[in-house]
Amino acid sequence: MIVKEEFLSKLRRYFNLNLYEVKIWAALLSRGVATAGELSDIANVPRSRSYDVLESLEKKGFAVTKIGKPIKYIAVPPEEVLERVKKNVKIETDRQMKRLEELKNTEVLGELRQLHTQGIELVEPSDLSGSLRGRHNLYNHLELTMRGAEKNITIMTTTPGLLRKIEGFRPVFEKLKQRGVKIRIAAPLTKDCIKAVKELGMTAEIRHADKAGRFIIVDNKEIVFMVLDDKDVHPTYDVGVWVNTPFFASTLNNLFDSAWKNMKPAKEVLKY
Image (cartoon, rainbow, N blue to C red):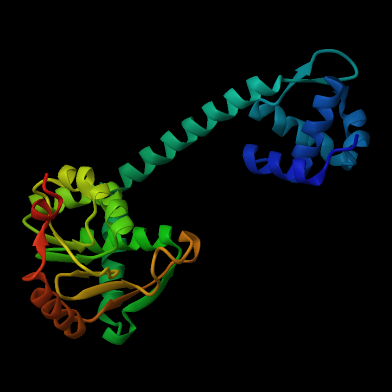
């Protein structure tokens, strides 16, 4: 049996199989029905391992044991395998989600929180900083930082950045607004922004900025700023810096206040 390594790698990735499993499965598919010894020879897998591998494939729904001697294995059609894998992934995901939800009501989370609080108290303020690589990681940290806001959030962003934040953070903004957190967003506004800005409604105050920037200030204490222009960098290589620094955050927020007074409201600029 000649199967390209690239194809086997794809199967391993999509179906979450190890190397022996994917080799035996491919061999079984090529034969339809076969013994463990035959599959071992075809797949070039040690015979001593083939029985364990086939037992694993049977449990996962990739094969069926045929009654008789010698014992043979029947390949399940790929379409059926796909449906079984999808079902198993959903069951396992639901089980894991339930387990994590239950964790909220246990002492474990409280002990973890206590450990973190004690640890933070021992950290020097200058150590509360870090770099964030990749837009996915950046936005995860932005959400984490904003969720902890108690008073205000200031956001300076680009036009595409505004659209991304409204789409990704709208539920977060709405919860913050309900808690009384004041949200201000400044960005170059274009006609492409009208729908997104209107959807955000009264949750945040949005104004037009002639020039774009990329930073967020939370409670005049924490800053997350991006060091690259998002139009010049692929999301994978986007880079940001998070700093917990009340002195610098307050200074930057005061500078933003001065610029904010001269910015026109979104309704006035977009005329919606």
